[in-house]
Image (tube, rainbow, N blue to C red; front, side):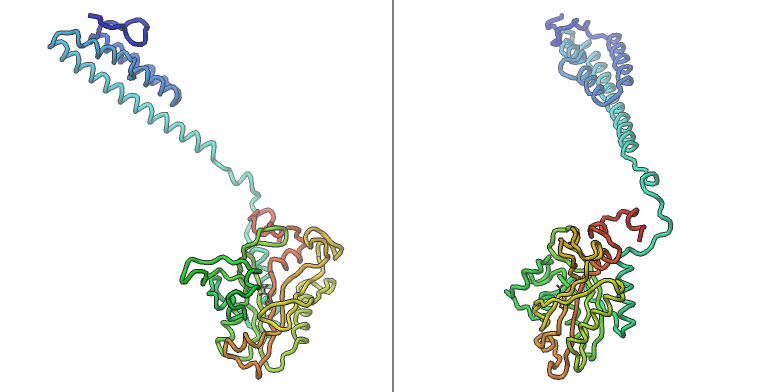
Length: 359
Ligand code: PHE
């Protein structure tokens, strides 16, 4: 009756019988329960149910039995095999549950141990500085205005005297938003578009500061962030002069940094102001002798300013013969690091509570 040796070449299994099946099932059951992990289970599954298993060998041997016996025993064998399959699945589910629980346990982060509990929170340093700047300008009679962070090309560039193809546009590498015509809607690269919104309002005179986030395709370094805060200033009145602008810059830098920090204006160029200047303060990290933060020059550029270009007034419907004004814009994050002697601007956005709690 034993027509073939079992494929595994080991001890040939005895002919299939009910007693043999019961013993086989008991043995597989016990060994499945003992399988300690998924790899051990997979090995047992192959041994019990695979091509070289006793079940398979017995199935083949059924062919040698007479019809009635083959049917009866075949059914018993199939049922026993189904039960073994079910036990393998049950054991697999149990082991997977265990493995998941172990991973969860291993991955658990006990945050209370890693971070000191900082107590009640407070405003982020940059927000504190922004509010302080707002207070200084409110004290000088300015109003606070806000624009939106998503702007059209018109407000961010064209109305500011930067027509398409103007070379100054490439100095402010932009993030465009997938809205409207291609490259027509963008994350504002500066707060100057709020000047246009204020001018369009048609209420003169204007004394306003406009703080907010701006976006540029810049690589972050010790003194640059691709997302940063600016505060824009706009004054439009009759008879406003460059002297008023210089006096205003001097007044607020002294108010923010104290009398020991020097401020200077350098000739500069912006399409929306004429004449234009950039303004710097002496580096508070090194006291002006030169360090990594000020790239060795002793001065830190805070922003730009100038007399509002007549073309800007005109494009917003304001008569440049009757009105004149100045504008300025500077980085609030820069002010924050200069005020507190923070060497690397990136610390402001790394969200390390131990650092932020210090301010
Ligand atoms: N918008 C300019 C910038 O971000 C700064 C600026 C503002 C210059 C207002 C002049 C007048 O570089």
